Length: 392
Image (cartoon, rainbow, N blue to C red; front, side, top):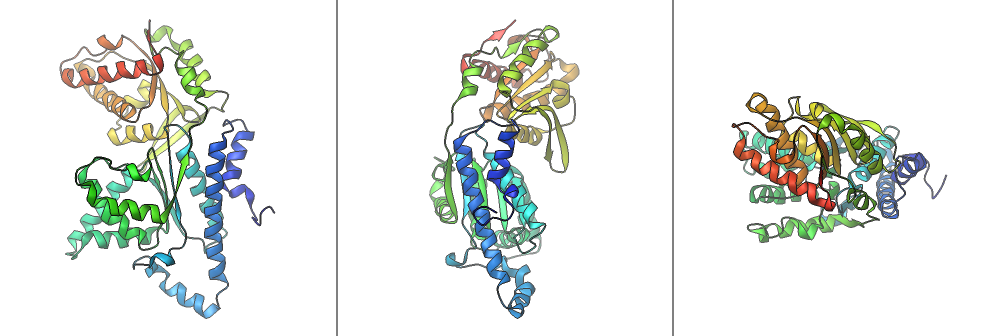
């Protein structure tokens, strides 16, 4: 037993240390500091659970009868169970990995500690889709305030909610989120969130942002702001020396393998499964937050824009093999490729690929000629990131 903790292996810091010892991760002091903050949050959850167990049995029985309604009503600020954590920092710093370690730790400990609060984890985009559905259901009942009713419904689903990639991009999401999320937080829901930006910068310069500011204040009240500081940019140095576009594919495999090995940096390589809306997307190889996949595995299968957003949310970049030339005969495949590039580009991810043609001659069809011009432009910009050049 250390620091009063009975099962160190189930804490995020211990999970992180195990990955470093197994050489599946590089040691990173900033990640270790965030993991320690997540450990402390679990300690606070356990302390709250312990205090409940110390109550007289009759009181606990009464609490058991009302626990299902607990998160359906407003709680005064001083009765919030614990402050959550809002983890922000640059792309590829390990925010999602650390949040997942926290989620898995709470779930694992809850197997033997049923008094610990329920925890659920989802991508922020998926949460907004779910929220729209719940609000629609509330409206169908004729509720006077469907958003408030939806907030109560969602709050009952989990006392601890983990959001990945919190981002607000349009006025509709901003207005719904401000009311819905505020209702959940005021009901005592504990939030662990990741984002590329500080809470103060959410929906920055957005339309009617003044209406969104009270939500930011509440988020900062209910969550500790935790920056995952920039570490050594070893990947940037590697990318600066790697060609981004290899033509033709048939002779480029050794270069792709070499690029992936350099970007992996000695981290263990495993297959990766990403679950989106009940479906599994398999990435052939993953080393930390770098993925390696064939074009066919990502674009010859019926994936949608939402799936590619999930892939871009999981990885800092991809090594992609065997991109074909596109014609009207494979227009659906071309469309999926455009979605993939949009997802990677919008999130600042890198791409190293092998293809049958250079970027300017990749599309030979008519159906998506206008749309693919933007894709080609984005590919060109991505190839220049880190001073990368096309290679023949």
